[in-house]
Amino acid sequence: MIFEQLKDQDFKEFQKLLFELSGISLSNEKKALVSGRLQKRLRHYQLESYSEYLKIIRSGDEAEIQTMLNLLTTNETYFYREPDHFDILKNQIWPNWKGNAVFRVWSAASSTGEEAFTIAFTLAEAVPERPWEIFGSDINEDVVERAAQAVYPMSRSENIPKQILKKYCLKGVRSQEGMFLIKNELRRKVHFQKENLLQITPAIGKFDVIFLRNVMIYFNNETRKKVIENLIPHLHDDGFLIVGHSESLFGVTNELKTVRPTVYQKIDANTHLGMRLPRTK
Image 1 (cartoon, rainbow, N blue to C red):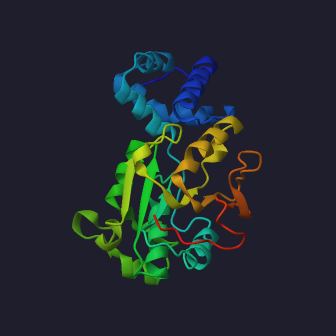
Image 2 (image 1 turned 90 degrees about the vertical axis):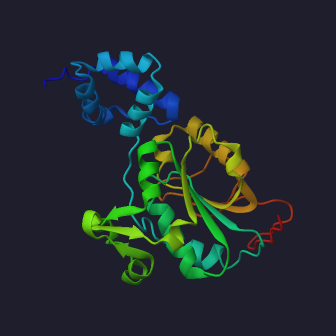
């Protein structure tokens, strides 16, 4: 089937829609990506042009709008990406945590779950007897469902230390040959659901650490401020927010203190420089 090329005016409409729905700003260089990823929907509906597909989106078809979001918001991820952040979690944040409640970590742009399960590996190895749980979220329903399955191609295991892979993962057999599965002992502590960072569900509660890595690069400054403004109420007063190495909160908020580049802390009047006081509730 031959498709009409994506016109500039239609591409601008997709840019506008994606920004309104998710806060993501697509650069003009992403035109080929949009064209390629949405081609399957034109084929599905037997359409010849992207303008015809836009009519379906404009009609308010919520299922198709989510499908479009799923196709346009799939981002690269892998286990132990930017590994020094997990070292900070293991060697600096986790050992100094004095609270009695469950230690909660939010992977706020979890994609297919590699980041969330890397956090799980890290905490399980650090002090396994302490109670902890991880919440992973993404605006993309497809990747959230895949993350919840906790099944990955064996090729994705290359960054996982062999002893961790052996201890917390199972080799797939029969229909899952060539895959590996996260063991239930970790899976039951990691939960995933769809979340839009522009409209966060209040019921998710508060967290001791929030990972928000390699997603703000897709937002303009106004949207960054809105997202951080939405996240801060879900961070305990002594909690940490970690962003990607190519990201910064400079000029975005004054409610977080820079601990080191890409690592920020929310502190209150009872928290002193260089230490974290126990959290009792």
